[in-house]
Length: 328
Image (cartoon, rainbow, N blue to C red; front, side, top):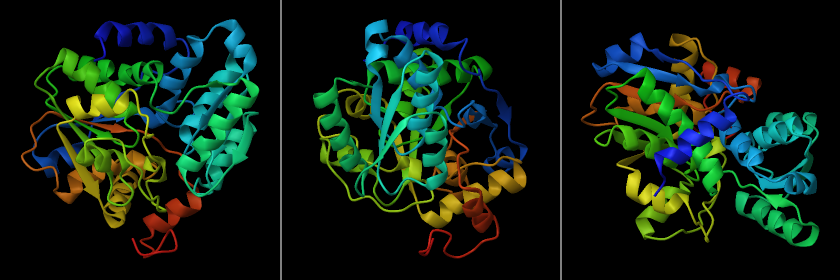
C-alpha cells in the first residue's frame, strides 16, 4: 500500500507546476445534508482538471533520455490534456490515443497543446491497444491515466490538502473511474485520518471499477455515452495498482443515473456558481440524490474537472430531456 512519504515527495516535486486549490464551504449543500460540506476546487487547475497533478509528477520522475523519447497514453480527455501540457513544459512530446466517445472539445484542446492525437475505436480499451502497439514499435514511454504509482501519488496530493484545510474531515466523496484519483486521495486521507470514510462516485452504466470489485478481479465493461464521459473506460485487465488500492481503501461506491448527474451539473452552476463537467459534479449529484446514507460530517467533495462542451452545458442547464441525444 502507498506510503504517505511518497505522496509528500510528490507534493514537493509538483508544487511549482500546479495550484494548491481551495476547499470552500458550500452553504447550500451543508444545509441540505445538515453537516458541513466543503468543495475541493480541482477544476481550477490550469488544464481544467486534477489530472495535471499525476501527469506532472510522472513526467518529472522520468530521466532526460525517457523524456527525449516522448510519452504516450490512452485517455478519455483530461489526462491527455494534462500529459500534453506537462510534456510540453519539459520539452518532451506527447502522443494521446482516444476513442470516438471523447468529446471534440477535449480532443481539440489536446491538439492545441501540440500532441500527436490518435482517434481509435469505440472504447478506451481499444485506444489502449493502440498505445501498446506504439510503445512496442516506437519506444515511446507509456504514462497511463491511472494505473501507475507516480500518477497515483500525484493525485494523492489532493488528499493532503483536504486534511490540512479540514482537519476533522469524516467523509470524502471522490469521482471514480480507473481509480487513480480515489486511490491516491484515500491513501493520503486515511494515512492521516484512518477513520475517515472514502466514497467513490460513478455512473450507473459502464462502471468498470465497480464491476471489477464485484467480480473480485479486473473485468471489461461495455462503454456508453455519459454526461460523466471522463469516468468511462476500463481499468485494464492487467491492472497493477489501483484495483488493489480501491479494494482495500474504498468504503463505499455510489452509482448515479444520467438525470442525477445532470442535476449535479445544474446545482453547481445555479447554486455554487461553478461550471463543472459531469464527472466533476458527481459528488454534488450523490448528495442531492440522497444515496449517501448515514453521512458523517464534515464532508469534502472533490470537484474534479470543468472541461465540458459549453453547448452541452447549456442543454443541461436548460433541462433539455436528452442533452446527449438519448434520455437522461
